Length: 275
Ligand code: COA
Image (cartoon, rainbow, N blue to C red):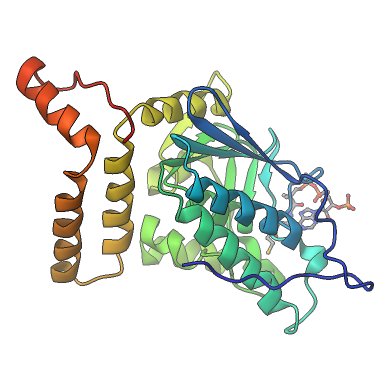
């Protein structure tokens, strides 16, 4: 579903700052697309950043790479929504609409997406990481949903994706207190999938993404569709969804390759084409 985004215009009617590259994307030779937030010191998620992220995510959906890594800077994955843009109830739908549009587009990319988190992932930064399939964290990473300290609630999935990852009780504790947690605690509660020490988290994320990029990409995309889509359904409907996708995956070239490779050479030896 494409969520339309409301434009933020300056006094002359132009969309503010759209020409600066605040989110860079590099399609690498190993099939991994590296998306890097580069919005000043703290990597705040302004509406312009979110617009650019949505454009990039839509492009990565239209012409998918093998896998995607999303990262920020060493000290700031992202410090959350750009608080300087906040301004009462009239601005909230615009800001919330940008979060919804960008993060739904990111979550909808039909490839494995990995957030490589170093430094602060707060508010919208934590929400951005949760819109990815996996979160890898440096041992200095800090996660949190501090919106309550501003007297507001998360608006980019913080009450929903966090709850699905860590359960309602822990999500309520984190959102109601705004408490920040380190990488090890995030790992222990299931918010983070791996803590990386002794090497840059981005290196490990790129290595992992490159492995996924060599895999059966149709099966990966359908796995995401089955698991993410199934979460919103009754078990009976979710099982029917899985059945439909199970039938569909056999139309892929990689299903043929994988099954005949097993029959000829045993498990885990197939070289996939990504088709
Ligand atoms: N939006 C806009 N500006 C932000 C920001 C945000 N989310 N987070 C930080 N900044 C600004 C600060 O106001 C400060 O501006 P200044 O240099 O003009 O004074 C600058 O970035 C550096 O922040 P500072 O607090 O001095 O750095 P720090 O290293 O001590 O702390 C944070 C960094 C991220 C822990 C802290 O700034 C913070 O808690 N930010 C708010 C996070 C938040 O609530 N996010 C959710 C928003 S809904």
